[in-house]
Length: 151
Image (tube, helix red, strand yellow):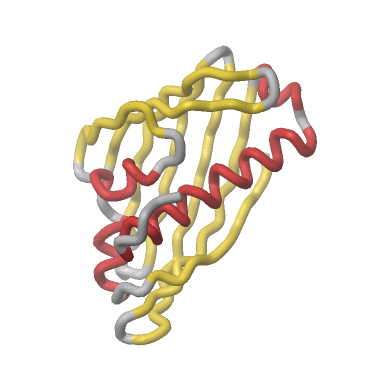
């Protein structure tokens, strides 16, 4: 298991960020390389995402659930699934800190476990791609919330 972390500042009030990160309909479409997406409950969704790491290319089917913090200052997101004989298990934590009345810092940490042929690739190849995908999710959240075009 590897841990990735980072922070993004969102030019949106903390209560609006909390509402966004607590909603499957809002967070789900922010996954990178999404091919299909379906909300199954207010805090759960399924998705199919394109995966390409070294010689392994294809799609992963994912099940995700959001657990909003009772204090309104963050959420947890779990994602499980896989494809092509691979598995992925992600447990992430989002903490919100108001920077100003109109700006919020979103600090995130994600524990990522990969199994199957992808795990056999090991080392820098997997680490670099997993870090990139994880960071892109949180950048997409920031961009979606602020209305900036996704990259």
